[in-house]
Length: 48
Image (cartoon, rainbow, N blue to C red; front, top):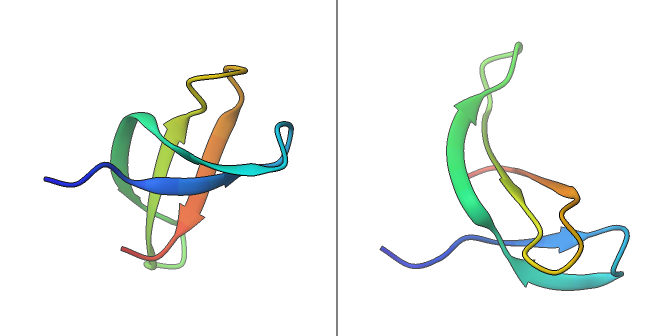
């Protein structure tokens, strides 16, 4: 499985998520949540 990539707001760059987990938001849409490996900030990406 390919590593999920998201935009880290703190680093202002695209990063590969560490510990990425696929979740479902309250409205039923899929999303991916993980941690930035550089600064440790939470990364959130809507969609698969």
